[in-house]
Length: 102
Image (cartoon, rainbow, N blue to C red; front, side):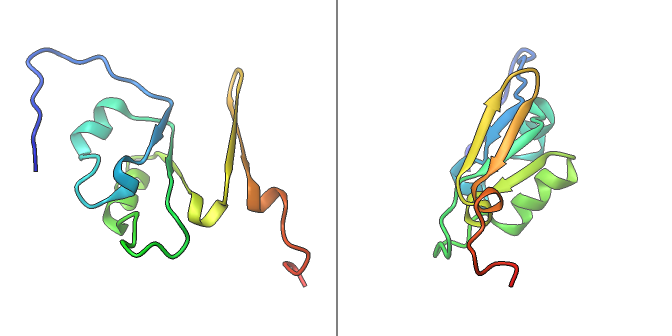
């Protein structure tokens, strides 16, 4: 695994962050997440993906740091609208199948 060191403070901040490498075990170290500290992280993963991403420990790391998380294998498509705030629409929640809730 590569390690990167900054010789000067790196001003990094993000409101929205895409879970790196679909949330693999070597992505997004605690030091990196502390520096960037996004409000929302989106993990773009497929339903029943064979790699089992995002890795549970990586997904938990985001939650432990107070970062809101979305997984596309659970929510389906995610629509983001930017204004004063970020409005998030989860496709499966906004358009449930008729047999859900029966």
